[in-house]
Each structure stands twice: as structure tokens, then as C-alpha cells.
Length: 249
Length: 249
View (cartoon, rainbow over the protein chains, first blue to last red):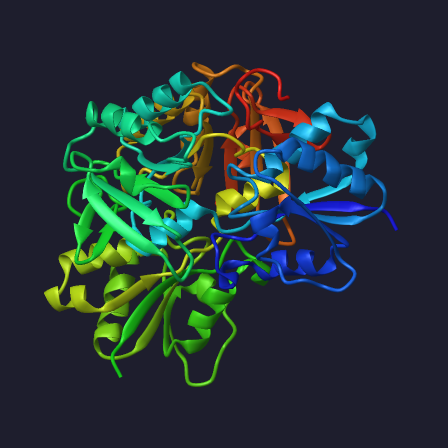
């Protein structure tokens, strides 16, 4: 039997947000490869091998998965969220690109999932109701000046902005710098949402104005959404109207 | 029993991409409200009422759903994809905002789902591997000049660009105009993906360079992804490397 590799995402947290398609891949796999905490979300199955690795060794993990598939195993590479958004799918294709030419002939597939931004938006209402962008604030893989350029462009063109990886112990200052930059372009009243643990039983939404938003509200489990000029509150919800032609009709 | 309203998305197409959380909402609802073709994807259940409506009457549909919830019904508003992305969730909150003040006290919730952009990316590889944005090319609800401004900003700041609603019978020319604008900023070699019916058994991916991309490849069921400067091909896949610091290491 020839091997295969499927990159899947376990969604934002609770098992009810894992698609049946992803569940089927996880049930069929002979080998699961992933960051330890993501593998821990997957129920154990007899005879299935687990290859847990540390954070930030994505390319090593991708190469291991490709080697296993090349050896005839049915491999699932397990990400959180959607595997194509700031996660393992790109790492797998980077490893193919730089690796053994025979890997290009492998049966490789990606299964979509629910990415954090969608779960965070749903907790708060419908803040992504108009055009939006997703920016990772981590400068591990790109220059901070690139991030600043994108933030400025997104603010000037009035996108709703979803910020992935807003803060970590190693990077405590980026979110404050991002808010500072955005305050130079967007109105102080712009709604900002800190959504922690979206799509889990511990989900928590804190909203603030851009002028008063405190970057220390964010940690590694937080997704931050900065509204567009049209984003507004109604009742306990924040949403961005679909229409930008004045009042909705 | 007091009423409730949950906005759900049935994902890009096949039932294996509907989350169990959304399935549970659909099973519990006394009333389903939605655009006919989306309701047709939901299995019939005895005693459940269906309120199918035409396309482009989102606010009417939202008001009906809110009235039913206010009358004590358990209502599911059914979108395709993720309900928060160019879909019904924003329309529901618009209707709350402009409607009966008592609607603000209703039990309203949004369930996230798999949006078309994620399913399209998965069909092609990992084109959304770095920062990206989502723009609807429909100018029904915003000025074409707003769309042009966002396309230009996104191209200049080197986002991957996902284009929703790239073409319809009533709007055949927007995608060609968008490509023309993007050719003024991005390299002609930039990969462009036309992904039709992503997340269904009929999924089909056509890739082209921006210089040669033919807008007539897109119809209402197509999602178009325009790469960043780093987006590249390996084997039969298109992906955007996570790293923008030169060669991946």
C-alpha cells in the first residue's frame, strides 16, 4: 500500500468544531505527527503511532511526516485551527520544495478547518462582516518593518484586521507597537476585540476602543480583531455591516 | 420556552465539512431560515419548519428569523461557508440594530464554519501560508472605488489576496478590472488560482500567472486567490512559504 500525507487542523479547541472529514483522516492514519498539545486533543486509537514534537520545529516535523509517507505510512500532520493559516500546511510544502525530489510524487492533501479568526469573530458577533485581512504579529519569520507596512496599508484601506500571534513571552511588545501605529491612522473609537480561547468552553471576549485598548489583555491564546470604520456595537455584539453605502436598507 | 437564534454555515459544500456543532444546531431548530439552495443541503426533520427565500433579500430574511425567535421559536439561520464571512451573521445584527429594541435582549449566537477561502486554499496546497486578505468583488454594497483602493493597498503591502464573489451574470467585468489593477503593482509571474466548487466532489483548480490569467475562468462558484511575491509552485501544489526572510531554513 502506498503512503499518504494529509495535513489537518483540529479547529480552535472543542471537538464539536472538528469537521467529520478531519475526524475520518485522524481515524484512518497509521501515524500522527504534530506539536504535542495538538496531538493531545486527538483520541487515542490502538495501533496508531504518535510522533509529538516541540513548538517551533515545523520543518523538522514536516520532513519526518514526509519520510513516513514515503515509507508507505498513512500520515496525518496535525495542526490547530485550519492547517493552511499560519500553521503546518505551508511548512509541509516548504519541506517538499527543499527535500527529496521523489516527495513531489507523494499523495499529499490538505483538509480545511475552522481557523481561530472565524471562531473569535463568532464569539463577538460578526466583526468580519466586510473585507478583512489576517496578519501574524510574530516577527520570527518576517521583518517587523514588513508587519508595520501591512498594518498601515490595511488601516488606510479600511480593512477589518485580525491579528494572529499578538503576544508571547518572547514577544511582549509587538501588540502595543501595532496599536500605536493603528492609532495614527484609525479613529480612537474603533472597536477592538480581544477574544481569548475562542471556540472552547473558556471563551472570553473583551472589547475596548482602539484609543483605550490595553495590549496586556492579549496572550498566546488570544486573537485580536481591530474593526473598520463601519464596525459598531449593537446590544452585546460587535459587527461590521455588509453595506458601506451609508445606512443599511 | 424562550426563543433563540443561531446563525450557522453549512461550509463550502460537502456534508463532511459541516461541524458537529452546526449539525447539533440544525437538529434542534424548530425553524430553518435561509436562501433556498443552502436549506436544500440540510436533511429534513419531522416537525421542523423551513422558510426558504430568494437570494439578495438578506435583511428581510434576518427580520423574519428575529421575529420567529422573539415569538419563542428555536431558529437556525442557514448560510453557506462560515456565516460571519460575506454571509448572514452581519445581516442579522444589522436587522437587530435597525429593528425592535427588544430584539437586543434575544438569545443570539453565531457558530463558525469553514469559509470558501480555506477550502479553496486546501484544494490548491497552502497559498494562504502568510499574511492574507479577503475582498468581495461585488459592488452591490460598496463603491467600486473602495474595492480598487483595497486591491491596490493589498497588492502594495504584498498580502495574498482571496477574492470572493469574483463574477456573476450581473457583474461580468469586475474580475478583469481587478486583474488589470493588480498587474500594475504585482509581477506578471504571480500565481493566480481559480478554484471552482472547492470542498465538493466537483472541485477544480486552474492556476495561471497574473499576466495570463483569464477572468472568464471564474463564475459564481469560483474563489480566486492571487499570490504574494513569495507564493510559488512545487510539484502540483501552490504554496506561500511562512518565512519572508529569504530561503526557508
